[in-house]
Length: 397
Ligand SMILES: Nc1nc2c(c(=O)[nH]1)N[C@H]1C(S)=C(S)[C@@H](COP(=O)(O)O)O[C@H]1N2
Ligand SMILES: [Mo]
Image (tube, rainbow, N blue to C red):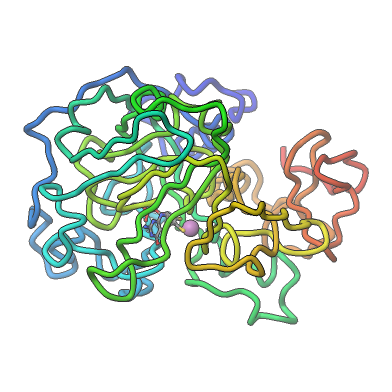
């Protein structure tokens, strides 16, 4: 076959061989998302608290439905996917990576994540009609399904030392040290923001939208610093794709993935998809929280920080914490490209991650962003758009 990366997504059926599967995922990553038909939730498939229908072997934690042998941390709960075993188009729930700042909050300990008590408040000075809804209200709303990649900004973190020329300063690479398992492909069912915005009525002064949890933290039943804002124009532009997810792969969300309801922001780094959602605030000002300041921001001379406005809202951070440009769109840093390359040619291709920087990844003209990190030897990366391929090494076939 020709260059399969450019094959249409529809070409990938359920009975793929392993190599083509990787290609399919890579293509999906490039294309972003694939839509399913609108589908209403069925009441019989609601989240049940205390459901322990996991496989009854001791390797599996009964409530997390995960293989505990793969956990990198339990406090916070973090688990990379065993990508070397992935052989299905959709990542199975028990293989799907978990990335938490804190331990997974449990309905048994904290009523805010119990679907019987869960509330979501949607308010702010830029909405006409604030609302406060419960889980059943959400399930009655129109929903869509979409197959989309979720990837942590830190996917591949244990390779950053080498890839990002940080061997001299390994202490700069912080966070859980997983390999390439911080990515998965799921079918999400969600109430789109188009519906929510229609309910609350957006005022013309709307500037930013905060997806807030505040639930997961150092102790149950305390307010914590978890959530992530985004520009309202980004949501309006993709109001059918961004939404409030309550199912993953046809099953009610698992506790580890944000039960009962999480935000879903396809295409952005996973950190934007706030789990255990409790509040959406839409305001005429910007929001600053940990995940767009001291965490999840590109910092350095190439990323001058935005200047907060006088009315901006700070939650658990202060103005001096605004130090760079928040991470948003995220190129799929896929483990899938490696088997693709190796299947095409037995020798390591020039952009294989473990080769010296000068011979690695090149910029394609016009591509954006081009992963320019200050001080790195990527001469073709000028500004935010790549100018030429002159400095590129040989690309794999
Ligand atoms: N409330 C809350 N939401 C969160 C996080 C968190 O720690 N707390 N982690 C974020 C990060 S960094 C990622 S990569 C994704 C991971 O989603 P997953 O664990 O379902 O794979 O959730 C995001 N949402
Ligand atoms: Mo993440």
